[in-house]
Amino acid sequence: MIEKMKIAIASGKGGTGKTLISTNLFNALQKQNRNVTLVDCDAEEPNDREFIAGDLILSFDVTQQIPVIDESKCTYCGKCYDYCNYNAIFFLGEQRMIRVMEDLCHGCGACSVACEFGAITEKEDLLGTVSQYSISENSTLIEARMKVGVHSPVSTIKAAINATESNGIVILDAPPGTSCPFIQTVAQADYVVLVTEPTPFGLSDLKQSVETLKTLGKPCGVIVNRAGLGDLEVYNYLKQENIPLLMSIPFDREIASIYSNGGLLTNEDAEWEQKFNQLFTSIATEYGNSSN
Amino acid sequence: MEIAVISGKGGTGKSSISAAFATLQHNIVLADCDVDAANLYILFNPTHDEEKRFISGYKAVIDKDKCTNCGVCADYCRFDAIDNKDGEIEINETSCDGCKLCSRICPEEAISMVQEDESRMYSGTFRNGKMVYGRLSPGEENSGRLVDIVRNKARKVAKENGIETIIIDGPPGIGCPVISTITGVDDVVIVTEPTLSGLHDLKRTLDVTTQFKNKTSVIINKSDLNTEMANTIETYCDEKNIAVIGRIPFDTLVVDAMVNCQSIIEWAPDAEISKQIKEIYVTILKTGKSTS
Image (cartoon, rainbow over the protein chains, first blue to last red):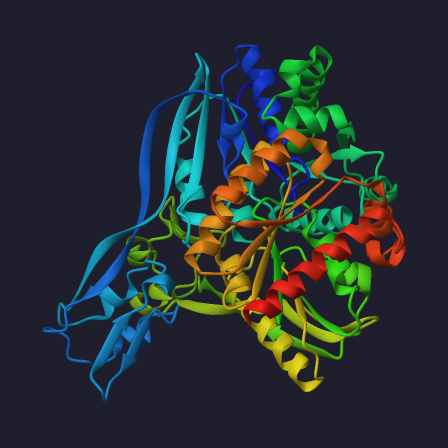
């Protein structure tokens, strides 16, 4: 039995049930006393802690270095302005005016390298926080939480994934979409589970995610949530593309109600607990097949 | 008047509600700013009168013939994007932020920057007016800048055609593309759902709209899936002085409409839910006028 693997739970479209799957899969494995870590990588809107309680054991800030210009040393040569690839330095040479636009800065350090007059030093800029919670003897939750007003969650997500030292099963609850934050998360995974819903919007976003994972060379399987609503197009697509359907969760007001109150299906219903254990077995089997 | 529909949490029904708004009043401009997972074109099938290439950023590429594997670039890179694999330097595309510093400092001039130009902005006509939307190519970044381009184009189209109302369908989350979506709009409508996650994400989204000083109101969608939680959300909004301008019950008609590529207003104009959405829209227009 596989005891060490990284699984990303992702979706192109938001709100398809990534968190529902991640938290319940984690809980089912945790109840079997397996070594499992859940990483909430949706740093813009982290929700896993609404479902899973634990004791905070560690927390650290994620920062970047941003420039501070000492105008008494600055010669207004404009080299830092030339080096900055993000338009984060506002510069008017003739007026002898120079400003750092902190919101645009990515903290790459190019301006510091550019400056030949020692006029640029750096200060820390807070991007987010990574917190680690102990859930049970063998299980941990790590949360990436971006600071409100910051533009990109990527650094915070990276720091959270890097903080997992687990030798066991790691579940990455990915941010929605297929841009940088998504890529940053799935790039770390051995296997990706895509959660979708059987609607035209769900299918369109699923296709985009599948294409992206193909270019990254990541094996994936699909969970259809809210089955019974919408149409059957998604099933045709899966057949056509030969993508395994790992699980199907019906649209059910009872399930919606448990979720809405921060409850876990795998605590409320033994049958679902079993289904989520089965889900892990399916994932491990699919991963085994794909890596052979 | 620009009305932006956002949500924080994904899948709360932003796009379905934006689509409804876009078909309630004749002749509007619809801007789909969820550039990472654009969906409204599926419903409205707009013409592509104009297509514009969007350069989202740059990636570093090493010329192996020139590279001496000295490792200077790896020392300078702050994005952990340059690996030293058994003495051979490699660029990790996923992590590269495109800052260009490595290319500038390489003593052999072995690193060049390649444009990422797969993303597009489209502008055209749909059955109820004009439509502008963006599609960010998977894995590309700077979605905020693409949102700016879509919004600028939408304003231009509105002006040229004497159209007053612009409906903006925004992305989920609270990061860069969301900030670009709400900056300077007349009205922000947050669509939430009665779940603990919905409430958590709503709080963070309100922090953003407060920080950017937007006039904000809230719609509780699928409100009957947990009436108690809907009440909790409404109480929270009352305390914060945020108007809850409507509750919309869960209705499978909305899914049917989507499957048939129509908005709920087009699909079931006389249904109770369509009347409720219409009332909400009238409220937005009224309060918009009273403040401007």
